[in-house]
Length: 188
Figure 1 (cartoon, helix red, strand yellow):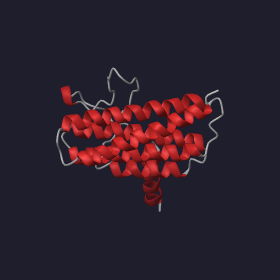
Figure 2: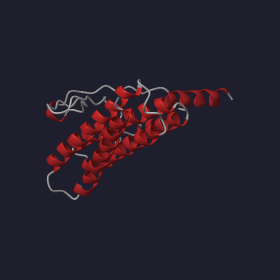
Figure 3: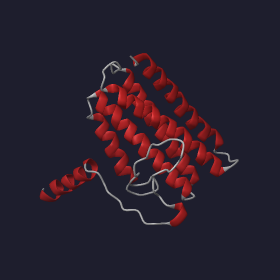
Figure 4: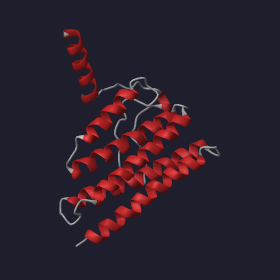
């Protein structure tokens, strides 16, 4: 009985607690998520465990589990934006690491989380003064997403993956337009 209780406790801790992973320096193809672009000043977070890791399933389950227990729409909106940023950084790291198919799939997942952030945002009153900075942050994030995906598509050149990346760019641009409209509506 004690063994089963201990196993459940360890599994619960793995699912709920964040998992930290250190990155090694790899020269040009580093997994660093900090994008130094002159156009848009928005830093992506470190992605942590990448989808090619055997621990990815646990991380993904933990993310989905946590989203079920976020009842505050503002917190859920921020959580989805953070997941979108992390997935984009993970996809970029996979593309740079020559795991292009998985990287493109992860980039598309990032844009799905960005869309979820928008869907949650629609239910929140945008006229609250504390909402303005976060709406601006999401707008900046969507611009950064489009820029990073365009750069990744440029690195890949002509590829059969162009439609998937074009779709992701389209989602990022659509979210950007929606938040621009929302910011204009709430402007004093």
